[in-house]
Length: 93
Image (cartoon, rainbow, N blue to C red):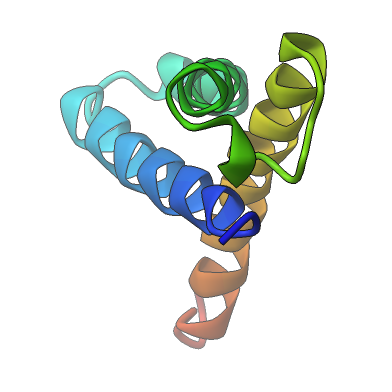
């Protein structure tokens, strides 16, 4: 049960990243902010999960550890996006 928070944060941040890309489709300058937005959102989710259900956050004892777990999980959703993008990349793109 204590490991379920990390995949939850990664999946939610991935979804938020996809929504962000749809909202700013015509503004390519905002695409460079996606890792910062997702890391921040992941940090907030980490704190929220810690405050509501602390045993889900890998037995962390303080809010700072939950924040760091959330930031790393949110940042890993950016890497997951790039893995998916490279796997389904068409020849010549």
